Image (cartoon, rainbow, N blue to C red):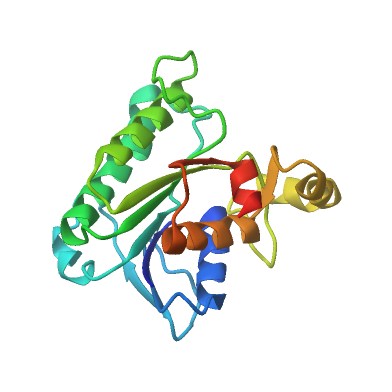
Length: 219
């Protein structure tokens, strides 16, 4: 399986990249981002690209892939609706529409979040935007598309948040997060489980397109 990965320097993307590099069924990984990951591996190739609305300059390098793991995401805290929609919906759909044209047999996997609003009518702005993003991804003619909705994620194996205060919380709360990951699969998963579940779904499929934390942990 040949994989394209967006967001490899973020916390979720770091975990997914680690599992891809370890998994024998993943032949190669193309990481696309604004900055390099700093990692070196025989299976990893990187493209530094800063316009996530236009891929015309690199289209020739995006064909021939079996799966895309889209792990880009931002917090809605302190952000107005228009900006959040741009960073969440516009950027995701621009990548997906390019990839489905170049790779119609691709499986597209999008990391969203628990409580995403599929009706697009609820009171929470971020949940409506995420819901529309999910809905419109599922309309594209990919071989299959899966929406991953983790609740809490415990970073493992050196995976770190790029936000210092968030990383500090993860360090302090590590024992609690480990306990919840073992006992509360509805509310907590790990970066390792998330990455492994995304690979398995891309390779083997899943009975439903939207996966909550319980599904991720089951896989």
